[in-house]
Image (cartoon, rainbow, N blue to C red; front, side, top):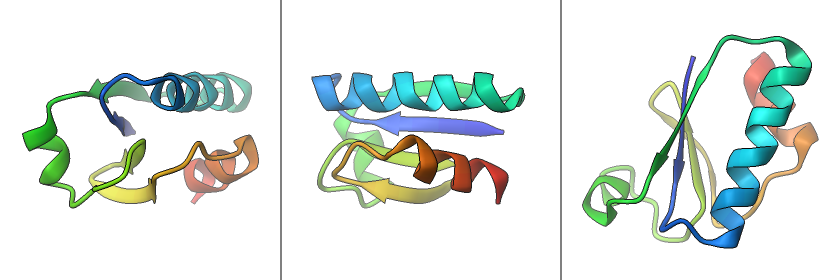
Length: 77
């Protein structure tokens, strides 16, 4: 599973990345978490408000720090 956190590296982006890593660890999943800070790359996903979360090429969240429950539902789907 490939997960990307899209954003400039702000506090919300960091919080999102940390929450995703925690849920991955809790569920015992194999996944890579990449931080994408290049705005031209972020725009390829049509994300205008950050942080954005992309799982295996699909945008699942834009403009907010997702809850652990939300993250868990994405990872189990």
